[in-house]
Amino acid sequence: MTVQQSVATDNRAPLLEVEKLVKYFPIKEGIFSRTIGQVHAVDGVTFTIRRGETLGLVGESGCGKSTVGRTVLKLMSPTSGKVKLAGRDITHLSRAQMRPLRPEMQLIFQDPFSSLNPRMTAGAIVGEPLSLHGATSRKESRERVVEVFERVGLRPEQMADFPHQFSGGQRQRIGIARALVLGPSLIVGDEPVSALDVSIQAQVINLLIKLQDELGLAYLFIAHDLAVVKHISHRVAVMYLGRIVELADKSTLFRAPLHPYTKALLSAVPVPDPRARPKERTILKGDVPSPISPPNGCHFHERCPYVMDRCKIEAPVLFEKTPGHWAACHLED
Image (cartoon, rainbow, N blue to C red; front, side, top):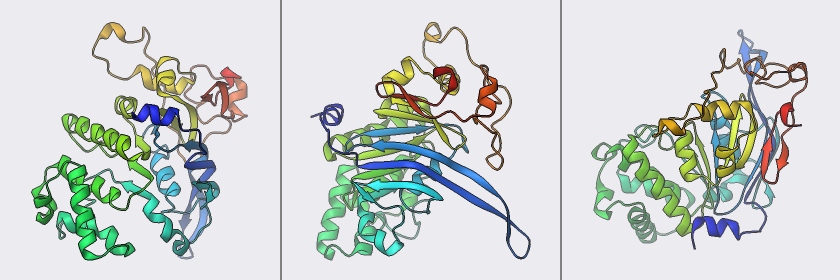
């Protein structure tokens, strides 16, 4: 059964449910650390991911994508909102309460160079989660590490090598193996291929798709490269300044985007055939506003070519324009 078939036939409740997620970071000043403001990193994000599905989360740098991923994994506590894993509300669980759930939720880091301990062998790096959770004997741990090494395309004899002896793509395979070793159901990939050469990116993306097909994994795939997201995702969520502005299956989003920001992003994607490029490229004016003092109303209104007075005072709600296609734009009301 293919990944697409498994997703299409899975009518069970979502594996991950995120509802109105908010994460603000306080800005402190002075010797008494007085709070003088807040960084609005994530501002009311809602989405779901089913088993065996990939949700691509895209947007410009600083829009809050990585913060969403880390908050979902409970590596940081949300300011408000709700996160559910397999129907269980994990929003307010303590570190001790989260520990039994950690094997279910894993992270693949962006940089395969800095995310691996240079003093540890590859086998020790991949096997470390097993020792931390104490679920298996030493023999069983080694067998499990050998298994995931082979699954990600590495040779078992490479387990004795150190990170500097591997190429960038191989190091990211080690990171993937480390995420797989505990048998998770959800993996958050935080720009997992952006630090790799383009040719290596394709290999790693194809590996992730293969692993999803074999193991039924759910991915939250965070990226800024729309071409990569189009290749791996089933659905795509577009973020701008802490909010999701559009959410749809990938074919619908790339064929018929609704939000002006999504249209601008897609118009800038390089295409092999110039004749296939949209007739008009949308050039956004100005810069992304500061998340310390985001604009009132729609966060995008200062750069939107279709701005109305309503946009400046009333924040649009993410609503379902057509089945499965959500947008947060007053133009589509």
